[in-house]
Amino acid sequence: MTLEQRVEALEQDIEILKKQVKAKDEQLTCFENILRNRIDEFSAYIDTATLNAPKISQ
Image (cartoon, rainbow, N blue to C red; front, side, top):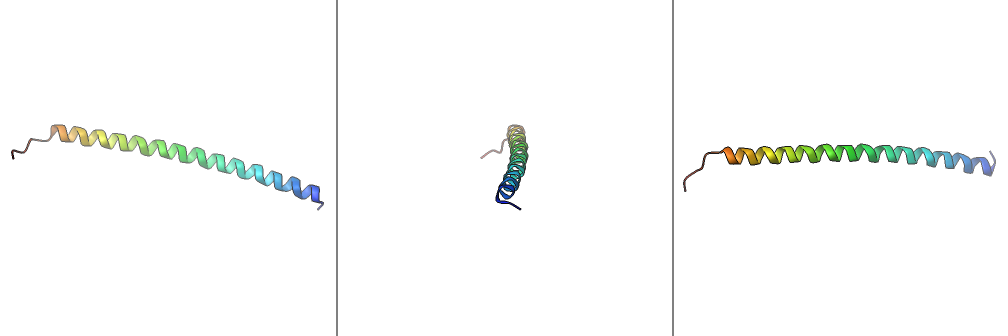
């Protein structure tokens, strides 16, 4: 394998890795959005439960 062929092969490997990193980044972004939505839903649930809870006299 010539030096030029090795460089081309490495460039192809780099492109493949870039695509994999981009895909993982997109997956992580999606997962982050899901987690944020769940946290927001849970916070709203806690707020609703707190508002509906009977008041405890002190």
